[in-house]
Amino acid sequence: MSPSRLPRLALAAIALLLARHAWADDDDANALMLADQVDSTVAQRSDWRSFIEGSAGYSHWRNGNNRRDSQRLSLDTQYDHSLSPAWRLFVADRLDIGWPSQNGNPHGINTLKEAYLNWRAQPETLLDAGRVNVRNGVATGYNPTDYFRRGAVRSPVSISPASLKENRQGSVMLRGQQLWDGGSLTALYSPELDDRPSSDGFSLNPGATNYRDRWLLSLSQKISSDYTPQLLFYQEAGRNAQLGFNLTRLINDSTVAYLEWSGGRRQPELAQALQQYQPGCACKAWRNQLATGATYTSPNKQSLTVEYHYNGAALDREQWDALRHGYLPAYAQYRNWTAAAQDSPTQQALFFYASWQDALLQHLDANLMHNVDLADHSRRLWFELRYHPGHVDYVIQWQRNSGEALSHFGAMPEAQSWQAQVRYYF
Image (cartoon, rainbow, N blue to C red; front, top):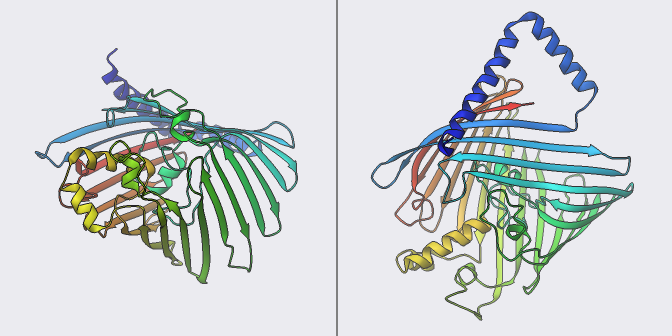
């Protein structure tokens, strides 16, 4: 069987599965049986949570106005099982099969997102061992204190911030947490297991997230009813320590403001990306990274988030113009490095995110995201409609990238793209 037929056959299988589900809904007797099964499921909570997702779409490419079709089939499974009152096993895995492949990657990519054993040694003391997806940060579009994000995304199926944080592999680590009334202290150690990521789509790929020994301490303490700051201390072997700070504050009943900051001595990102051209660069300095903004939520389930992003380790406007009009291999290497790090290639950006739950119709959600690069004024616009009446999600996504050639978003090969998805939970 030709590999090119696999995604199409898989999509056909999904269509048959969904059609079978729809026919069952039309039959009264089967509907009653299904209700009984649902009641039984509620009474006996399953350890499994899985869904299968199929998508199809197309993109208009910037050069020559070419069109490229794409298909994807994904299987996402989560297993959360209590072995005893004190022990718990958690595993989360995702398989994506896409056609055509992205950026020369294999058609099939399996991501073992998490697999760890949890021990509640005391009611307030927790220990974890295994692969854990640690996510820090209070901002939405950019998280300077999300220190374990670099190299974690193997198969980007959506540019939605929630998808990028959820659909990524964790780091192998030992983690301890001590809880008390209104606060917590977390300490973790993540060892080096490999020095480079694997190109094998079914590899456990420890080199992507365990490429260096790393440590993290985080302390949270509630000071008042609406004021709980978090302090972080992060260090990689051979690198200077980085400090982090997260703060949220309830301005009024409908508005939350927040600040996320990370700082420390480090090389600029261009020097880290171009080590082969600048070995031993003596260019360390204190550099700040920051995301701050606010979210307003209306009584009609509408919310609007506005953020300002600053990455002091990236290029300012003059440096960015010089790079993108200079030596192209260096430009490409810097873009690839910042993409893997999930950092912006330039210093300043604006981010807008609007959502509306039950938009004009119950179970219909609308989401809109807009990125603006303040160095080259390139833009990215993303829109999603998601209808989720029950076991099935129906999704339409649209994306547009605009800007000058070799600008942040203008360099994306796709000028515009559409994607339709169907997700079935079982």
